[in-house]
Amino acid sequence: MKIRDMVTADKENVMEMVQEFYHSDAVDHEVKQEVLEATLEAAVSEDPILRGVVLEEYGRIIGYAYLTSYFVTEAGGINLMIEDLFIKKEARGHGYGSQFFQWLFKEYPNVKRYRMEVTEENKGAISLYKKMGFEFLGYLQMIKDI
Image 1 (cartoon, one colour):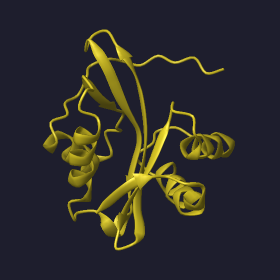
Image 2: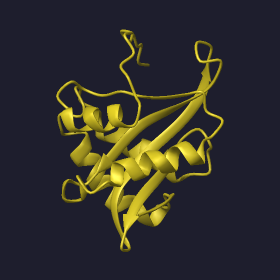
Image 3: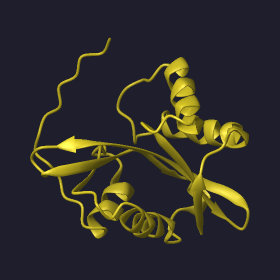
Image 4: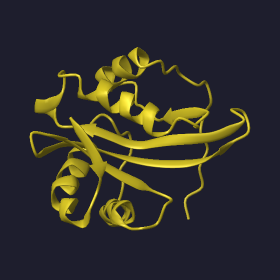
C-alpha cells in the first residue's frame, strides 16, 4: 500500500468516500455539504493546518485520512488529531488500517499523543484502534460552533 498527499485530481474520488463516511455509523451528527467541500479544499491546499492523504493499492484509491496537529498540555507536546480515517468496504479486513497506523507513527515520530473520535457503533474501527494501542479518554467534549 502507498500513502501520499492528496492533490486536486483526487477530489472526486475522495468526495465519494467523504459522503459514504459522513452518512455512516462512524459519524453521529450531520455535517453540511458546504463544510465537507471546504474541508476537502483545505486538505488539497498548501495550508499546513490540514493534511489530506490518500491510501492507494495497485494504483487505485482505497481510502483517505485528514490529519491536523496542535499542542496538548496534558501530553506535554504535539497532538496529532486524526480527523477522518476511511477505508472502502471492499478494502477492509486486508491490513490496510494497520499499515496506515504504521506509516503514521513513522511519519510523525515527534508527536506526543495521537487522538481521534469514534462512535460506539463503529465496532470494527474500535477493534483496529485498540489493536494499534489506542485507549478511550474519558472526557466529554464541549463545542461552540460559529
